[in-house]
Length: 297
Image 1 (cartoon, rainbow, N blue to C red):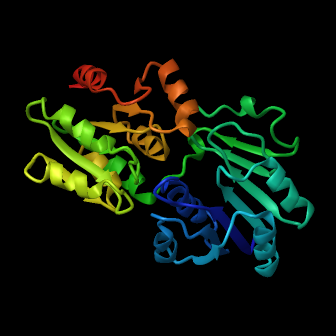
Image 2 (image 1 turned 180 degrees about the vertical axis):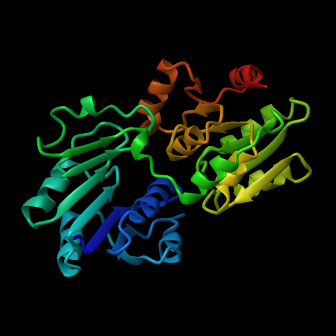
């Protein structure tokens, strides 16, 4: 039985919050383990969420292999969960060669890994694309049957009812670095009768600007650090989101959506969605977004 688990993941205004949030869900699969998160203290992080969830927190000074290996040995870790784009196959191999650690790596972009278990829980994840990219004995867990979902989504999906077809759920990432949420609201103001639930976090540097813009718009409800995401989705008739972690939740809730790519690490999911004829935008474009909204409403 696995006793000691270390999760190596970061969050920040630049990286986003999705890695930590999905890892918190993953950790619920190990109810009897002692779990510690090893993270850097980066600007705009949500390390407090780790402590709120009841897990231990180890602050790293760097992303050096030597520092992480020292932490693994000090804490006598059995399983290392890696959810970090800065850690590659060579890094993982070094850890394996210098400890008896078992590694579970999360991946979104079909990179090479030197791990025991690889998890890609995204919509359209294809295990065939990992051929020659992971060790032969690596267990592949790919696709929506492995999607990491909080309990609230299962509860709210059962209760989900039909709503006004102009109730919109918007989530462009917890940090929304380019303030796309504000740009989407500017597009939606031309649609009569629209009601918006806009989700973001206190790590969003554009939050003051966003608040000023929606101040007198009673049809826009802003939710900062919400713990009721599933309930908000259940009240909505369609969503405008980035093709990131939250898209898996929207898909599970069977909510029609428009996906707007906001970062390069979303490219594989974006290409899959486009290939499968979902409503997508390679980047924000007000005119094209308005056209796609008209398809839904």
